[in-house]
Amino acid sequence: MSYGSTEVPATAFAITTVNVPDRLDLRDMDDRKLEEDTRRRFDFPAFRTWAPRLFFIALFAGAAFIVLELFDTWRTSLSPQQLAPRLSTSMGVPVEIESSRFAFTPAPRLLLTKVSLDHKVTLGEVSINVGTRHIAQVFQGRGWNWGEAVVGPTLLTLEQCNFLMQLLPKLGSALPNSLSALRFTRVEISEQPWLTGQWQIELSREGTSGFTKALAQTSSGNSWMRFVLTPGEQGKSVQFQMDAQNWRMPFGASFPMEQAIASGEISPTSLQIHDFSLGGTFGAVKGTVTAQFDGLWSLNGVVEADGLDLAALVRLLSPPAANPDQAEAQSEAVIQGNASFSGKFEGKGPTMLEAASSAVFAAPVQVRWPVLNGIDLGYAATRPGSKAGTGGGSTRFSALSAVVVASGGNVSFRDLRAHAGALAASGDVSMAPDHSLSGLLHVELGATRVLAPIRVAVRGTVSKPQFGR
Image 1: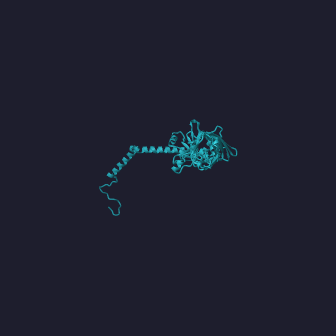
Image 2 (image 1 turned 60 degrees about the vertical axis):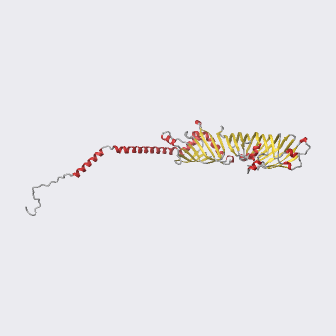
Image 3 (image 1 turned 180 degrees about the vertical axis):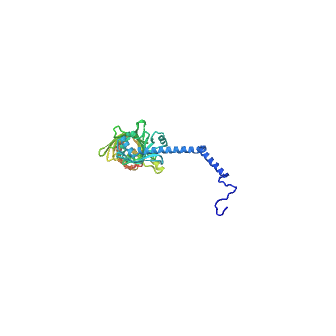
């Protein structure tokens, strides 16, 4: 051995570099091998857990895809640009739609706004309802199916109503077959006081015939009016059937009619009421009406009645009593009997209502079993100098006749003649619109008594008549 040498001195032992694994290394190797074996095997518990979830996710994705496709189809086929030309072709008039959209609240429906028909009628909003049954039919591949179409509040003139009725026969081909009804929720007729109120109009399909008629009705309290409307054969008029209950006429009688029926046809320039009947506790009157427009409305017609109860008619004209004592005093009407007449009326005016309000009705009237309450004319005639004898009692006649002339609420009983044995009465009596009476009766006893005729003045009201000298 020498100093300064770098060699390692040789010994009897040898040092090796071989790495022998311990227990931790072996366990780690086993864990890795188990993990690799687990990855290679199929995990059935995880599959059972996730398979249903994946199925519903796929189903939802497919449904979403179908809905998006349907929505895209709807957006194309039901857009104003596609829908308006189809309606124009089917209905034969220009149709314009401002916008269309699908709404889900409060119920699924297609909303069309500002639907213009031939620039004559504009419907502010049309809602086409879609129920759950109709949506299900879409997924069954039957295409779009609809419930009913609902038109929002609308203000129409009588001419516009006539225009819509002329389009009625064309709606069957213009609207889808699945659309069963078209309903106007609230319609107001302008410039027609006799049609005031809020009307509901409904058009329904009748089998394969399509839309053939419309039902229009309005109600208020216990009164209602209903029209069944059908387009006329000439295509310019509308045939109608009217029913009403507790209906108050806009002219003439001041009390409501318990029942009213009429049928005829109407156009913008004419009205034909083939027959009408107005009834109540007093009986019924019936007749016909014709009206033509030529710058002015010319109205004429016939009215007749048989067995009209005059007492019931007078009670309707009398205001209701304020207390029971007054009701007892008014229990007997000023005139009783059954009246029969047949007369004509004529009128002219710028509107149909003004022509009817100004019409003059004239008819000879015959009264059976007439009774005049409030005065005993026989007693008064035998005491010509007594003023007190002209009040109270009643007079029964064997016959009574007069010519009734009525216009604008004024009613005149002209050439009034009544007989009760030797007693004869004649004169004229008028009733004003406020039901006040005025007139004069001439009473004489004939050849049986040598007495001069007396005069009896008629005053007061229908409910409280007054007789005096």
